[in-house]
Structures are given as C-alpha cells and as structure tokens.
Image (cartoon, rainbow, N blue to C red; front, side, top):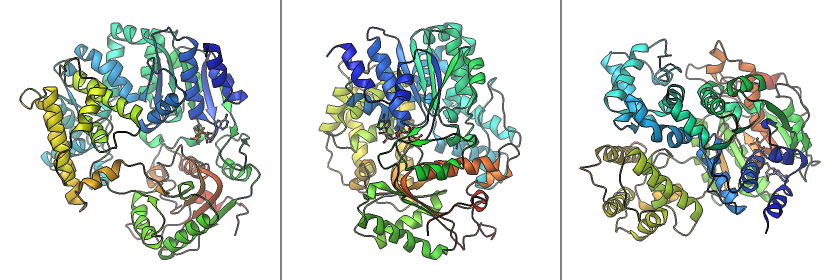
Length: 595
Ligand SMILES: Nc1ncnc2c1ncn2[C@@H]1O[C@H](COP(=O)(O)OP(=O)(O)OP(=O)(O)O)[C@@H](O)[C@H]1O
C-alpha cells in the first residue's frame, strides 16, 4: 500500500471535525465534548504525522494524564499497524525523566552524583519522621495536605509547616533522592538555566500533543512553553474538555487560548468536537445543565433517540442501598445489558469496599471488576512494579505491551541506575529470560524474589555494586509484605497473578477513576454535599464549590450511554455526626426524572 492510501484509510475512520484536526498543520486547541472521540483523534493525529513524513527522525510526543491512557494509545497505534519508532507516548513525568532528567542530570548539582526517585510511601514516611523530630502531632488528613512541592524558583510554598517541608527536602538531598513533584521542578530548572539542554531537546521534537489539557498544571505548561520558545517549529495540540476539569485541587488549570499563546509564543487555532458517539440525546441534554458555558452537543450514537432511564432517588435508606443496586444490576442483565457495560460508582473508596463485598454475596453468579486491595501497590514509575507486571502476566498475551515494558526496564536500569548491560540484553532477551524462570514457590513474594535474583544474576547485576537499586528492591518487597499483613491478604502466587489479570464484569469504581470510560448503565450513589463537591472545595477560599460539583456531575452523567441512576441515600453521617444530604446543585435542578 502507498503512503497516500495509508493516509486515506486512516482519514476514512474520522468524521469531518475530527479529520480537520488530524490534517491541520496549525497549532490547535481542541475543546471536545464527552464521547466525541478525543482518544481517536489523538491517536490518528500521531499516526497521520508519522505517516506524512516517515523520514523525519524528530519525535512526535503525546502527553497523557495516566499511564493507562498512554498504553491505550500505543495499543491502538499497534492495531493500526503504525511504525511507532518516531512516536513517544507517556505522562509528563515520564517525558521529563526520559528527555530531560536522565540525559541532563549532569547539569544540576542535585542530580549529578546519581539519584533515586522515591514513591508516595517513602514520602509519607519522611514527613512522619520530620513531624516526630519537631514533635508536631497532627491528624493524618492534615499531614496529607502539607505541600512539599516547590515553586518555579525551588522555594517552599507551604505556609503552615514550612520547617517540615525544609526538613523533608534536606533529607531528600542528603539521601540523593527526588520525589514525583521534583521531576517537574528540576526539569524546568534544567530547561530554564541550561540553554544547551533546551536547544537539544526542542531540536529533536516534531510535535507535542497534550491530552486532557484541562488537568495540566502550571509547571507542565511552562515546560512545554520553554521547548516551543526554543524551537517554534514544534507543532502543538492541546485536547481536552474544560467541563471535565476535576483535578483543580491537584493544580490542574484549563488555560485560555490567549494564555497558552503567551506561554508557548505560538499562534493557536481553536477547534471543537461537539458530536457525541456515546450517549443518547436525552442523557446529553441532562448533563448539559452542568456545563460551565452552554453549547449544544449532538448525539451521533446509533442509539441517539432511545429513551433509556434517568433516575434520582433521595429516599432510600443506606441499609437498603446494596439490595437496591443488586436488584438493578440483575434487572439490567436480564434485559441483556452485558455486565461490563454496567458501572457502579461513588465519590469515595470507603463507600465502595462494603458495597463490593455485599454485591458479591447477593449476586454470586455475576463477576465484578471491583476495587480489591492488591498485594502489590500499583506504581508505574517503579522498576520493580514494571518487573512484577511481566512476572505475573501470561507470556503469550499482550506481547507488544510486554515488549514496551521490558524496554522501559532496560532504560531505567541503564539510565537511572547507570548499569552497563551487556549488548545482547534487549527487550526480547528480558522477556525470554522472565518467561523461562519458574521457581518452585507457592508464595507470591518468594516467587517474585527468585525470579528477580535469577534475572539480575544473568544480567550481572549484584547487590554490592548497585546499592541504590537494591535499596529500592528491599523497600518494594518490604512494602508488599507489610500490605499483605496489614490487610490480611492472601500471599498465594495466584493472588499475585490475579491482580494483573484483565478484569471483567460489572465495574465498581470511584467518580474520579471513571473518567474517560463509557458504560450502557451508570449507577452512582453517595451523591452528597460534602463529597460532590468535597469539603475541601467547600472550605477553600479559591475554589468554586458550585463549579466543582458541576464538573463532577458532568463527568459522572456523561459516562452513560443510555441509563443513569443517581442515589443520595438517607442515614449517612459525617465523622462529626452531621447528616449527609443530596448535593445542592441537584436540589435546584428541576428535571423530570423517571420513576
Ligand atoms: N468517527 C467515529 N466514528 C464512530 N465512532 C467513533 C468515532 N470517533 C469516536 N467514536 C467512538 O466514540 C466513543 C467515544 O470515544 P472516546 O472514548 O475517544 O471519547 P472521548 O472524547 O475521549 O470521551 P471522554 O471525554 O468522555 O473521555 C468510542 O466508543 C469511539 O469508538
């Protein structure tokens, strides 16, 4: 097939609005409604850019909000049979590590003598250690609010406990460690203070596509801005939906086109995607009430005209909610809705654990993709977690993904831990080696330790010469063992395989985690003022509680293809005994709900 035929085949799968965006040679800011095919547009834009200039060796970068989204894009490109050698997709943290921190660590005194990246768990341990040192006794919710992130000039932002943050950073420096936030701040420092680094990095980039731009934080915009100011040939696309900006509390900002133009020193064209392939027109009209600035979304779904169900219940008691949801699920399945097409959500995890237990009891014949506490904590930045993903998944399945993970492992070992691996060690070798080690251990941790020891020994990696890698390893094992003990989990090998198995069945998750997904039926409970919006927004002097509630309800409702059930059950109280009630904005929304 010729290149033009390849391109035509790609474009055939897009509607006119999507095509315009994919083919545009401008810098574009795309505001896209839910279900309008943002992921499709982004994937096809990457494919189109790669195919239209196959000889360019400059990189096409896609920045996604989660590792899962990056995996999805890479899998879709694989299905389209696109050569991905010029395409890079990952989170901003991964981008910063691979393109800025690892190659230019020598330019910062803090990094030049080697460094390791700590995770949330170590972060929390350090904070506790310093609070103890200063004899500060505060509740855990307050601990988690201590801002350890620094500003663009590496100064402390935290106002209430600045001495704790100083102690924390001193400890990191002393241990030659950095945390997640420092990946961004130090990348910014390198780009800003070392023009050679920014010229080199910007010089190898062809385009940057940012997904979910409404969740991008200030530093991320600034990092992209330095690159485009250094090389104005870089083409930029921001795609997102300002009505779905539910990460404001984590620093996400949906910048205006003018602000983006200022930061990047580029001119932008605005494009819109307002055709929704997901929901019926009725569901769309229902959630459009929560838009910040009203605009018309048109259903392009084959089921656009179906009535479906839109239901709100504020009278059910919390003790009856599990039976009621179980009945609903049974009813939907009897109507031939697939279990995978049903999702039950709540604003907080603690509401979901008892629900999952109860639903499994009430519906023993139905499978659930429910929040289980897994023996290993998911952490895609940790090389030992990446190794676990290979060790505890079946060799013959998802081979391209396994190859990618193996390649990432080699990269981390050589670039982060400066390990000189033998030339023959490539992703195939790693996969073959892991596939061939089958220790005789029924316990998951022992099994994992055996594989790692044998793998490392065949790679020539030993404890004596690689103390920082082994300290991460010991920490990883220690944390896993502690998790198993704390939550009384099974340490059986099968429990480790289970955690990485693709889950099927009725999905049970939180309102934040459901973002980007779609289901025939969405059942949401716990729709309370204090959870939607969260108390943090209600008490915040800078965040608008009404907007936060609107955005959350917009995300929840826009996941539904046909049916949406909302519950604000009676009888739930806060820890202080105050009674939870329906979120305010739904009290004032006079909608003609189904009964
Ligand atoms: N041109 C198209 N033709 C047919 N179906 C499409 C087209 N574009 C997208 N879709 C379908 O629309 C649905 C929604 O797509 P996608 O999940 O990419 O939307 P989204 O814009 O990312 O949604 P959200 O913002 O809610 O996360 C998917 O099922 C996708 O296959």
